[in-house]
Image (cartoon, rainbow over all chains, first blue to last red):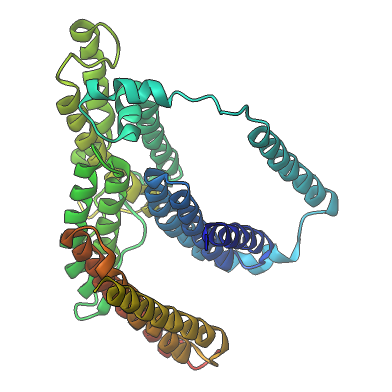
Length: 315
Length: 97
């Protein structure tokens, strides 16, 4: 008996139910929890579609990191929530929002359903040329060789997002430490976890980074894991957030994009095009770019979660 | 032999699913935070453990089996600590549902 349609069907129903619940629920904290569960469900859907790379990213970013980010936002909004809950938007604003969202969903559904059969694809070209990159994972090959420009711009966008968050800092705290101060409870459970888990997490992150060349994985997932380990140590109070004025923080943030750009421009004289790799050097160059990006992504994501500077530095 | 292993997988995974079901029912039906946590940890610890044990004979390599066991151990660690933290917060904020 083939159970696959049953599993997929229940997954679709669950995803839709969680999505509707997330929109309908009144309490923003509950909505955030719903959204994180929605991210994890979507990761399962990606697994069912055999897109393991997307599933890993969705679970790490959609379920994990965005969840933490939104929970912090929800907790911060809590004192004002009862005031805002009273004045709900007018019915026509709600209706307009519903019509807009519905129209977008409908348009997307129409586009997906009217795709020509077989759908247009560049997969055969990727399969044909993947040997020239020395990589085994087609997703990594597309992200860092065939469409490297997109990945470069993504890395830059992430830094821009952090600058946008930092620009919310009040003038008197500029250059200081982001977020609140977490007090260390030396014998607490959280401190115990923050001592026990990071060594494991760092090993897993490097493993995910390394297998990314040939199997699902890569810098983004690995960087998210590293960010999570750092955040755990910060939230347990074992270490404090660095001041954002520090030079090493700034360098860590831009290293990924800078290395990417340098290797990209080096491609012009050595390989004849921006972001082209010389014959035979593709894999080592891609590894260097990925390693630098992983560190920058880890630092950027962690600082995004921690928010704008809110405390004056001690110095 | 292979039939025996299949039987083992079916029994262990079914038992694991039973604990997940029981844990979910408990989460929905138990009256307060502490008892709900008690139900939830059964799903994490026993349920996932049994599912992993049931899947072990079906892995392609010993390394994959080791990864499965590591996943279970990590969930044990995370589950135990998360429920401790939730329980402590609930305990401090007083007895309410």
